[in-house]
Amino acid sequence: MPSAPSFEQVLEAQKARYKSGDHPLAQRPSPQQLPEEPDAAGLEALLGSQLLEQAESDPESFERRGFEMIRKSMDGPARVAKAAECKAEANEQFAAKAWVASVSGFLAGIWFLQRGEPPCPSIVANAKLASFEDIPAALGFGEPCENEPTSTLTKEEAASASALRVTLHLNLAAAALKLSQWVVARTACEFVLMVDGRAASPKARYRLAKALEGQGELQEAIAVLERLLELDADNADARAFVEALHTRVAAASPAVPDESAETKRREAAEREHGSLETMTADGWAKLSPEEQQSMLEEINRGLDEEEETGAEFDTAALAAAMGRVGAIGRA
Image 1 (cartoon, rainbow, N blue to C red):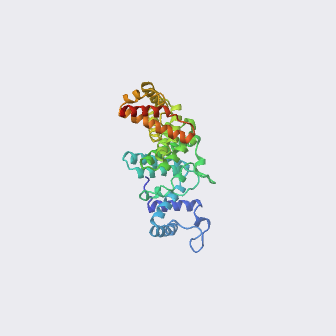
Image 2 (cartoon, rainbow, N blue to C red):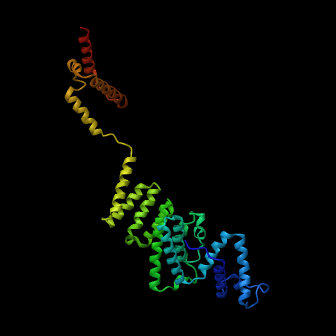
Image 3 (cartoon, rainbow, N blue to C red):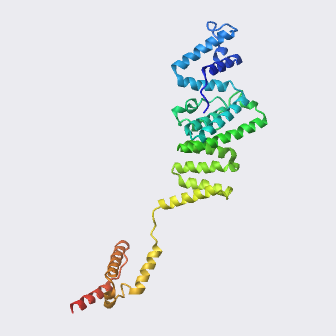
């Protein structure tokens, strides 16, 4: 993450804003506050006293405003250079598994590249707060404003800034996944896909699928991975991932009885022992107790079906056979 601005840095940024006519005091100076052309000492004393009061009364807000003042004092090329610096620092933090600090750094780089004057995200001003709620809204291009500093970039500088913006979003997604911040990772990847479309890095779709999996949206994750495999059939990681998701989805689906297997089982039993209607006393006597019990259960199932459908289940022959078995036993 970028280091918090020092008091001296913020003061210098304020002085630069004043000299450019952008500072509120420069736009509406009060005769009681400043002479018409304040000297350096007078300007520093006035601005410094304001900043000191802010720093003492609300340190966290001072840090956020400090970043905003420094950013506002930068031209387009300086903002791109600062974003690249933030990316390099965040990569080091990521390698050290300092996930929150790396999120803060990647987001800071995105913020320095944004158009307009968006507020500094809280996690950039103070990573210890680890507040992720405002991150999704802080991604993307930002809203343009008048006298946009990045509008002065050359064609080559603008292309470099665009590529850097995409990389920062991809890296932010990777860090957010480590923290199970699914919405942040998903939003970052969706931005990359919106910008680069079909030509987007495979990492964008893979990490998007990871975020969707984290949100429990397995079918959506599968669709993203299948699209990735359409574009990159040799992507072994994506293939292994989608197969694992298919297995999970199948395992979570309710088991459907195999009716054809059950029908075959019944037909085989009938071929071996005869049907219920054609069963003889001798045939019944040859059945094992388990087979007789199975037959009785078959009768019960048939009676249940008769009750539900109104169809007649003919058990007369079996009843007669069972009666003959009883008669033989009594003889």
